[in-house]
Amino acid sequence: MNIAVLGSGFIGKYLNSYLSDNHLTYLLNQTDDQYHVSHRLREFIKTHRIDVVVNTCGYTGYPNVDACEDNKASCTLYNITVPLVIEEECKAANAKFINVSSGCIYTGYDKDYVEDDEPNFGIYNPDSSFYSKTKHLSEMFLDKDFTNIIRIRMPVTSKMDHKNLLSKLNKYDNIIDFKNSKTDVVKLCQFIEVVVENFKPGIYNAVHNKTLTTREVTEIMVEYGIQNDNWKFIPYEDLDIQANRSNCVLDNSKAKRDFDFDFGDEEYYIRLNCAILQKSESWQEKV
Image (cartoon, rainbow, N blue to C red):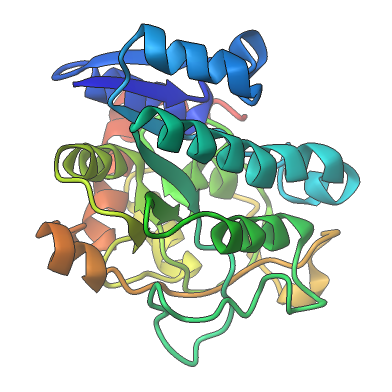
């Protein structure tokens, strides 16, 4: 099967490396290939006989989503416009489309949010971040009867990348204690491969079972010798942030029901990544 992975950033590089073991993959950089230009993407899909396009490209801001408030044009382009362009070209080429998105469109703990729940931290919430608004709009505009949308939250890996939750916690002195769903990136790659090979359109929450709080995660990190001696838990209101943050738990039972895929318990994957980081000692690298 020929697969095009669009976006050579944090998720894209992991995914391309993982899928290339069993499939012919093409990793496209958003700058070099300009795949948001319809005719170029159309020609690429045709020339390489692409069966599935996986879009990992998105604008999350650097170093965090606060940057989206100041770069709304880029945030809109890569979170809304680009997925729509890709979907249109996939339809024209009869190629399947998987769009990696975000679960940061919910907030609160009234329930564990399922895929059909109306987002309460998107365009209808005046206090939501611009980033969350673009992710909500993207889901609204995409064709859920054609495209598979995979929501992730707070990615975790065994490398101290600036997008890795463990890296972020290790870096910041002041942190808040909320329960939030998380996504191990390798497990995400496994799920995407299952979707590639057994494609179904629709929205899927790609998160783990038995969600941990931030305090529980840092306690595990300390067990593995990964810690910031200046950690201090502070109230959310005391955070020095420009945009509000999503804090919520997502339900993953739809992935189990439709694909027989179990994301496993969150604690296992936090411990697994901490164990690898401990051996490499790369956690000492501040990113």
